[in-house]
Length: 135
Image (tube, rainbow, N blue to C red):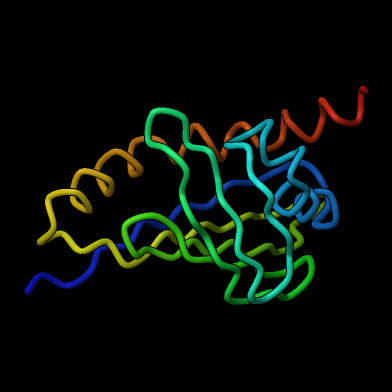
């Protein structure tokens, strides 16, 4: 059996942790930079993300440390963990998307697709925050 694979990325966002936290936990903001869904920063909260052509993805929040950590289950038995660290006037956002079973064709396809897709998604968080500030 192949060891489960993990995607790890880091992105500097020129906004304080409170704003980045809001971007990760406010359904209206999440929909602007990633996917519509009813996310809530509450352990045990079950929600879905509408991934368009990939369908509705069932998720469950498994860990919350306000303005520091949010972790939830995601598609193909994976886990997404967001870690926030204050850095200067902004935030260093760390993403760990773990648990991809590379022995499964579906999970292997998802791993490769998400490895390519996550960088652009992370880059869109800052502009989504700025868009809300202008509204």
